[in-house]
Image 1 (cartoon, helix red, strand yellow):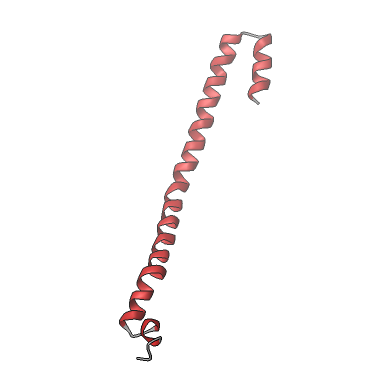
Image 2 (cartoon, rainbow, N blue to C red; image 1 turned 120 degrees about the vertical axis):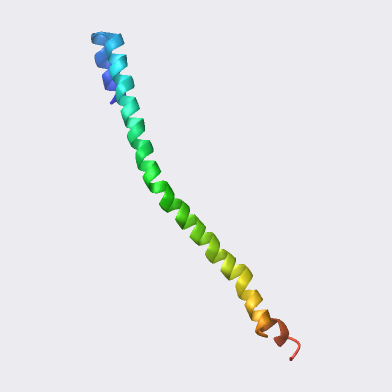
Length: 78
């Protein structure tokens, strides 16, 4: 779309067409940033959730099994 606007701008007033193009690009970038800012908190919550699940599975579950007398001591016949 930008290239089409530039082609038309070459046939008409170039300065005015460039101003309109800059306005269009500013609006487009603002809309894109607004959409990104709406999705960003959900993405951060998902990442934090995955990290917490990983922490629980990797660190806490073996600690609980050791505390409860699980797999660590079963090799020694205790």
